[in-house]
Image (cartoon, rainbow, N blue to C red; front, top):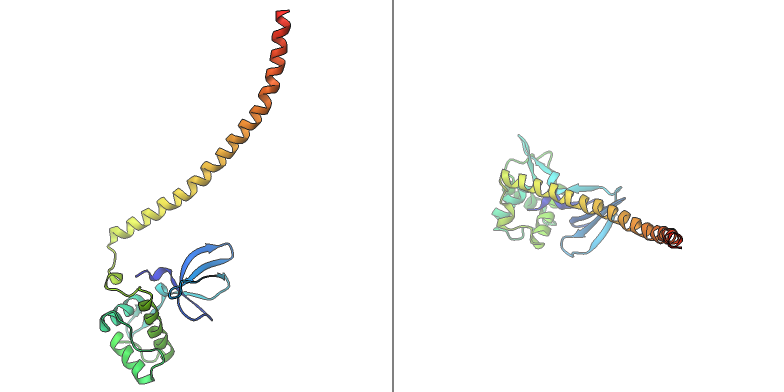
Length: 192
């Protein structure tokens, strides 16, 4: 699952995918409607990849909780986030059996159910999406990013000298006729 690019924006319903970065913000795309919008740097944003849920012994990444829910519900939609409190607690107990009853609030469970259903509707919840990449694959991804960064830097470097070269050739063109004229005069003087 590509949770590292999925975000929640405080004050906006739904989940969004990061598309690109601007000088003073980001361009995001709603995962269900595919509508793009820009947000400022001052917006409160939460990356789903950085969110975890409390258990009595540790914090479990949201990715693992989504995987448990997907397996319990056969990768189909789960309960509605507006379900009664007892149904939400039963849903949470089935999804994360050892969750901390005092630190995981009902509002957290509602968000979990809502986000899962949004991701499922948008096609992010599939058996393939929970396959964890192997360590060499991660290195390959890092290497690919490094190559992309170098490729992005190289065209800019190539373009600047190319512009200078064209400027020089224009300057040389302006200088050459001036240089040829005096040379032509000297040649005519010698012939006389």
